[in-house]
Image 1 (cartoon, rainbow, N blue to C red):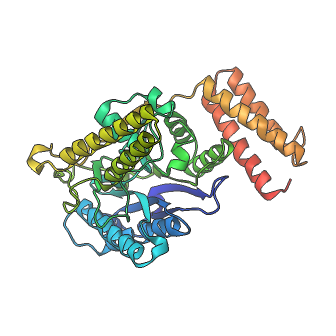
Image 2 (image 1 turned 180 degrees about the vertical axis):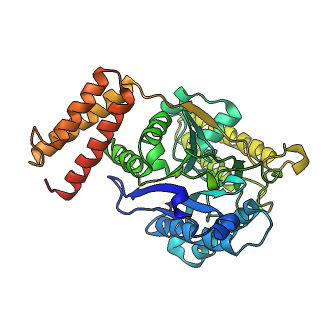
Image 3 (image 1 turned 90 degrees about the vertical axis):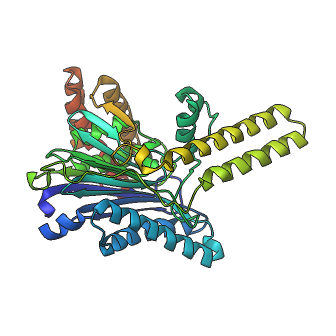
Length: 415
């Protein structure tokens, strides 16, 4: 079954972090029987917490979820995956409560399983799962972040977000901090030969645009695309850990042959009736408003309390959506895709890559790692030629491959 998919996976500490709190797992079924029962399973987790807590939380997630998933005996794989996520949350929470240094540790977690009935996703946090078919690139997961929740509830514009009016790094849901958690389930999605899936932490999606991610996924092999994206994120500052897995479907033997089962409605762990993360955000906003009011900053106090009220409204809306009786939700899991893009290679993307590569060559020259007429120079010339002929896809491939080679030279310090 290993020949049925091609996988590329890279995890990097980034440029500003002391340790890598991301973890991932890529588990391709060994045989047909195993695939028919469990499918190919892929997990990306981004840990949160002081000291080594985030690293521990993410590692527990990628270890525990496959373990519990393979132990479940429910009829439907998506039920087994949901239960595995709940069991992982229970263990991460227990470990956090047992050690003061790990208290409130958590992790975002996105899981993809490719099965006979199609691809299914289980998700908590703002790590993402994307799907590429042909020229269409779709985000299959909803970011559990304050930004996305406020956009859903209050129609906040991208301009307001870009101006910093809404903090981008506030997560409203994760595995571990609380005794129970709401799990998003998506799918199943029919699978065809040539389809590609991408899982990533926000260290990637925060530095590359969705279209850039889609174009590189489409044009490059999974291994080259994953490395090129991580290198590009680092060249743009690399403020966070970066993890990406890309899965390409190669054989018709794992394509979806029929509609498979009829999915039931989305469900969640009912023991968590209210989004705790948003509740914490409301409490922080109220405290900030009180402090601002006390010191005489009335305008800031009003802004803080307004954000708190908005967050409270979001919590109410999300609670209402996620706790509807099953009969009120259409006969399917989730509402994906949440965003959709057309992945066209264009001159703008070529120019950005060319500029990045130019800066790389200058850095290499300073370290005496590159001569003007070396292999990288030839790759640059080929990229320039293709760009001048408006062969943008070819030019993007040229510059991406040259960038990966140059970054490897810089890391190793060898000519």
